[in-house]
Amino acid sequence: MATETPGLQLLVTHARLATLGDEPDLVENGALLIEDGRIAALGDTAELTARYPAAERWDAAGQLVLPASLCAHTHFYGAFARGMAVPGEPAANFPQILERLWWRLDKALTLEDVRYSALVCLVDAIRHGTTTLIDHHASPNTIDGSLDVIAGAVQEAGLRACLCYEVTDRDGPERARAGIAENVRFASSQSAIRNSQLAATFGLHASLTLSDETLADCVAAAVSFSSPLLAGAPPSSPPLGGKEGGLGFHIHVAEDMADQEDSLRKYGKRVVHRLHDAGILGPRTIAVHCVHVDESEIELLAKTGTWVTHQPRSNMNNGVGVAPVEPMLRAGVNLGLGNDGFSNQMFAEMKAAYLVHKLARRDPRAMPGDMVMRLAYADNARLARVFWPDLRLGELCEGTAADLVFLDYHPTTPLTAGNLPWHLLFGIEASAITATVCAGRVLMRDRTLLTLDEESITARSRELAAQVWKRVNEQ
Ligand SMILES: [Zn+2]
Image 1: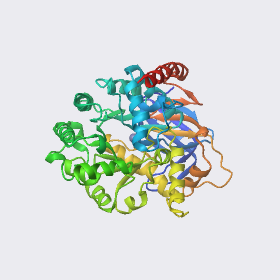
Image 2: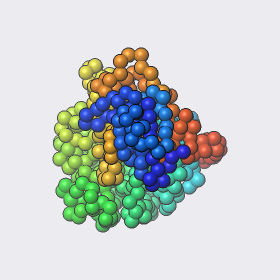
Image 3: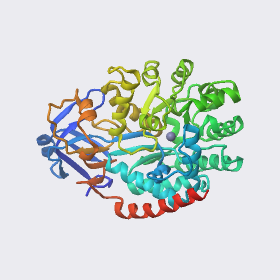
Image 4: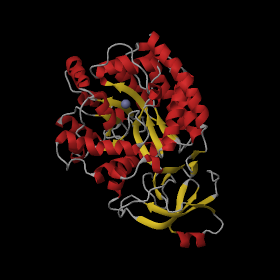
């Protein structure tokens, strides 16, 4: 089986290649050559077979091959919440969901729980063809070294992830400082090596759990961080704290009205204005959700080049509202699609995005399929370049990363490059995925995982989750 071994060539043949990209094409009976983690050639099967006779072959047997999915915001640490009974009355609003579910679960995590939470999410990501993930981690009783544990799992899986630790004041100043230190420590450990699998950013929980003092400490730590690898990254504008090369941030923004009410009450300004004044916004910063932002905040997000990520399944589940995605896009805000800890099945997130805006606006023209597709692939790939400036993801052509997903999908209506979004939204299910490739390495073939032992991970996860639930109930 092909791996990342330099020089090794793997030729995928007899595939129906959906290239996406600026000039999307559907190549029937297509082939692509994988070399050194990238697509070295793409074209007709007969032609490429003749040109590369020595390459190892992989006959796709007419399967549809797409660029792998990307996830712009997730939480590996939430994996054990599946099926967990939350003690007490059901949460009636978003702050209660945080207090009764997430802030109990994350306090109960040990380092082994952190590792297995990540592993089960990574199994899920490979199964569903999602190879690039931007994670946001919390484990307040075991902060130091937690990002290394996740990084180890990511490397074992063979996937790609950008990691950070969420700094918050909710557990006192000592843990806020420990969170800052963990972000800086992990980013420093990554700064010396150019790594196509791992990247770092600076995590913050949300405005409502961060004092001005802590925000200032975070900005000071992020600004003073410098890495030669960030030299090629897009410059902050205005420069973060006046210095180029610092880390950007990854923070939940106005997910619920409670975040805005808290900011207005304590600081007399709306969340996005507060974060801007603190030096948080910029083209390397991700503002997650932005459900309750007004026109002035949208303008500021666009002006600063700040990234916003949209997670419709999470927003629906928490009953927080519907993000103004189309107004943000019209204003020129950079927008990506994440899953907020829901399954790493980005097709499901795309379907939710496609449906919820139509219902909320009672307008079937809202959030058209090609717009959803652009968010999930082209825009998420642009966001990934903030962390991996050398990588081109989300499309198939010569020079792009060999991140692929194979689908056993045989459409009952004509499939073209132009109508692919609607096949993805109405026809293609994640159950059609048979193979996943990340950076040229085959992680799943014929629905069998090749890098992770799914059975033992599942068994250990069930044991650990039961213990976590017990500790949650004892809190
Ligand atoms: Zn989140």
